Length: 88
Image (cartoon, rainbow, N blue to C red; front, side):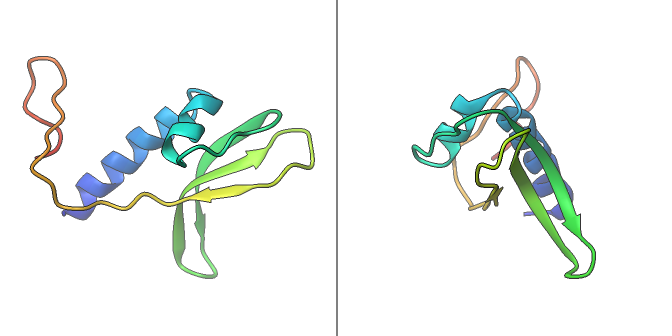
């Protein structure tokens, strides 16, 4: 899959994660967040590694989570209104 498409998908999933704790539960197969959290994408320059999603506690000492999105080939397609499919 082209890198530009993967970055676009990653950005869409970050926006989904920012919609609230239910999105985190859905994407992680059931993990639940306790308390307030912030979500961002983070690049660790010293490791030359980009974290797709960092879900970090906001104002409390709860655990932080790193969410990585893995793309796999599929015949499934997602369309947006009358536009061409986003994924094929």
